Image 1 (cartoon, rainbow over the protein chains, first blue to last red):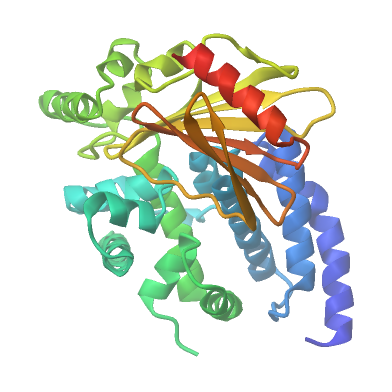
Image 2 (cartoon, rainbow over the protein chains, first blue to last red):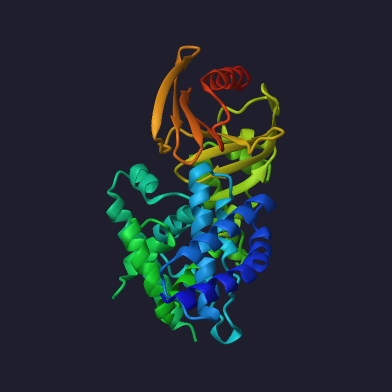
Length: 158
Length: 228
């Protein structure tokens, strides 16, 4: 990444601070939201990943914030796991791309839904693997297969 | 470079090793398909884990209620149904039962886990927030405490079906009322105390290294006394 890109990105990140904090505060306690926002902005500023300005860059920052929030939840379980999944949707689907998630979920097998629900509730692959007496790799593959089915079901929507 | 769907899915769950994580992160801003997939998975996570407005036909409702009640029976938390704590399990289709929410100390007792009687612990700690998690395989109650000038403390009791091993740079073991308590000191000025109480694993997390072994000993002893 060139130096001018880095300087431009930092300026943008500083501008984004308030908006990111506001988004996170809808889901997290104020002090948690502020901590997550600050750390996300630091990580984003230090990142060597090249991201062009625009909607892509906003999505990128929110992904980093989500990762920071997940890290904090796993470290001290102070954040509510469902909030982690939900807070990142600052970028809603446009009406043209509206999707019927419930219809897609209906096409999943009960075990796959249960698996996705466990993960959304904050369970780690290793925890589920331990509970079910299987390898972590097996869980990783099952989760990916379930998600692939979700995407396939969504694509079939009219 | 090419990212597999399995890598993208594990990235979404923050389950990738650092180098793989970096690779996916660098790929995403260049790939609209992957970004769309992530956005859809967020929507799916919300739908699968939170209360979904019920559009179920009346004929199907009893089946869903049976599924929800059976799942809660399986984890020994029928009281959660009786108190209406987890109404949403009836609304999320055939997911067995998943719920995570803020409750009072009293409401958290439906989890059948050891929880203190009082919202005070020695050292000026006062309950700030209680979080109850019930899943088909495990339950936990997380009690957050505050005291002036502190970043806080959390005590979590887990059901017997889960193993939780907080990371630590350095560990020492003390004994409180004949129970071994493992204290771990983390790199990021955090400390944990971990012990087994009845069938539960209990973990105390301090967000700063503001406590020493003698305060941990006093806290664990007071907690055991209250939770008996």
